Length: 270
Image (cartoon, rainbow, N blue to C red; front, side, top):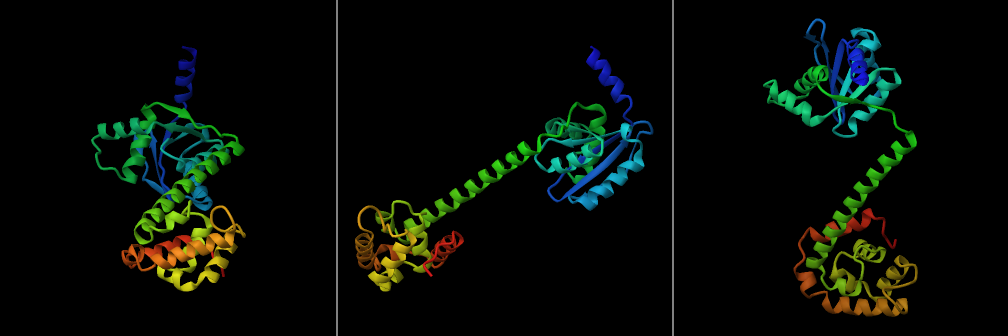
């Protein structure tokens, strides 16, 4: 009960409720004055420090800091930068539930979802809705969290590219898998960079192919055993199958994709 009374007492001091519809490159803000029951025009600003300072001046023109509350939706990382910026300038910043704010907007009869409508609805919802305060986390943990998310995205992208590579090889050069355990290995990527398909690999000659593979695999060759022997066996097989199904069924753009992927990985014998 004491907590509720304390909350009501605090909220009674808040006159200006600011809703911010956050975006990746641009935010939109609107202020609802509960005393005069009016809204300001939607204030757009880009995600950079000069425009953040411009938005700060916009807030300062509304009224004292203790009478201003800013609400942002908890819908992703885009609200963190502006939220932390405002907290550093002593503003009260709270997080709004995106589902509840969406239902509130629909209840107002505003079915169209636009940045301007959302900013105005968030300001109105902030005056009557539930929220929780936005707090500044430990910078170290915040950075680690972002780096972890970034790594997860990179792993997903790499997995997608490797799967695409394997699917293309299954059509363009199915024999390659019999000699290469890992089709995304440095050795395979080097071959795909320097030889545009089975026919080019067969014409290159055993010595050139062996040298390329040994350099790419740091002298280990392919698989177990002596590197040069394995290279020769592979090249003889490639020569025998260069005009087989692997070469005949390849599409015009498939080997270009393989070469682009391998080049992106930085593999080359040159």
